[in-house]
Amino acid sequence: MLADTETGSVIAAAQGGAHWGYRLLPLLALLIPVLYLVQELTIRLALGTGMSYGELVRRRWGPAASRLSAALLLISCLGALATQLGGLAGVGQLFGIPVWRTMCLLCALIFAMVCTGSYRSVERTAICLGVFELAFLAEAWLARPEPGQMLAQLGQLPLGNHDFLLLAAANIGTCIMPWTICYQQSAMLDKGLTLDDLKPARLDTLLGAILCQVITAGILIAAAVAFGQGAGGQSLDAIPEIAGGFTRLLGPAGGKLLFALALSGGALVATIVVCLTSAWTLGELAGQRESLEKRPLEAPWFYGSFAIMLAGTGVLVSSGINLVKLSIATAVANALLLPAMLGGLYWLACRELPPPLRLSRRYRMVLGPILLLLAGFSLYAGMMGSLG
Image (cartoon, rainbow, N blue to C red; front, top):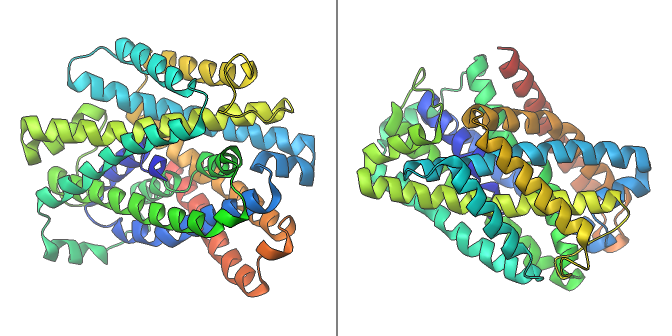
């Protein structure tokens, strides 16, 4: 769940705070229960069927549907990975390090860490890195937002404004993402969890959903104070520009360091998650379920896919592409892909779960409209925002 507060979330929330003040905070709060409900379905499917999302799609709808699902997922992963590495390159730029040098170092270190041959060691490393995201909460507190202004803006939701809808779609697309859904289901299988782990897995996911949205709200609040607190505010075109606002709030040394640690923590966790999701997905397409418990020579397809994805995206980031625009475009693309992903997840949960985990009729009647509303608004906001 720490991967959910990644570079894309930071950029979308910072853009939202800079341009619309506190007006997107209600959306961030509403996404907490929805995020939990969606990820909880992956827990049920993983522990109840012993199969990943891709494997269930293949069993239910056949190889063609599986290939289409995997293609859409890999597109989402590619954009997400470029966003994470772009954020880390931006952090390097804050300290005068060239982008290509940052990419070479990061790709080598991440691949070396994954080659340890243990999911648990990778997970522990990722969690330690993700703890630095808490620095965003410190930044929101130190920004000292004005309560009166915050309350006044919470009721001002310009739902007819294309720019507002675009950022709303981006914030949805960086909260509930196709690759986080697939990752959690596959990761539970790689860990070897069983039905005995159901309750702690649910609690872990709930706490993670709350934490990642609170952190995202902290980013938005700090950005609102730093960049103008209102509609028509500043548009941010680069990671150093976003960092500049936090530097103005907290001073040149403290602001830069806190921002660098917080952004790097989320980006590194998300980089690991995205690469693993891509490798697992490609392995499933080849008819092989690979695991981090295997050494590189025992699972060349898995580790080769991981390395190619990481290196290829590092080259893309080094090419000089506008990373903030890429991040927003990726988030909106996720929002546009979300209806198909949520529909597939809900259908599988209704059809594939064994009796102990089967969704009750009442729960289906509540969950279905919630997911439909989320998918519909996500699609509408993404389309209207893009057209505007």
